[in-house]
Length: 282
Image (cartoon, rainbow, N blue to C red; front, side, top):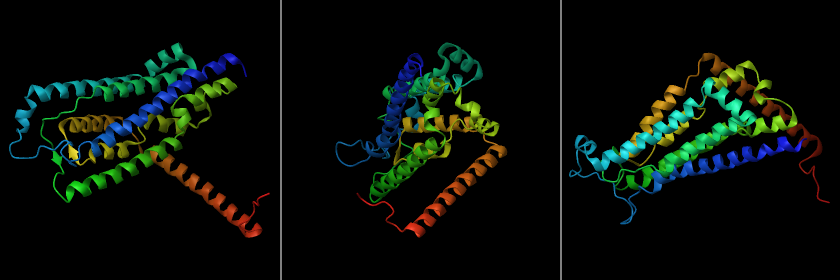
């Protein structure tokens, strides 16, 4: 293996680590911040404004103290959507491929992570606006955050499982560089046409799980409502699976279950013949 192609692994792995760190930061931003920093657990915690003295929604949306952070937040979300969508078009893909070659996917993932970092770093929370709902009285102040935490935990587990099933190394662009170093070409070249068709439609395989994370919060402030609405609209527009995709997904799932069943049966036969203590200590 030549040394020069191996150097391409350095930016690919750097993009992978940066994207992984951004993913961890995203969990803090959309889950932990919403579940814990808004809980009314004491005098230092921000209290939800749910009394009759709160401003009406119409008056609140005319307040410059509320309009300014909402305008900044809308701009940040639009910036992310434009980057994530425009760079996925065929024309820009061809341009980035001509510029970055096999690092095209790594560059796209890096730009997506960078756009997410900008969104999270410069997001403006609305402190004085009304809330669509808020759990500030017992027992709801205890049970609702706990239920939301459990839902978020399950949703993130499902998201990580789906990402692993969809070949995490390929999604991050590392596999493309690795195949290039071995002279094996593009990993997508060995995939079936049905799989490539599915990938072109399923740009967001964690659609329902991420929507659950966005909406299942104990306190829905104006900025959180804005984030949930914009990403719900974006993910809904980008989710374009059809009947053929569902048939292909069902066939692949059945195939994985059959492989798992055969492995379990083979392991059971091995235990029946040799007993549970096949491996003994020296």
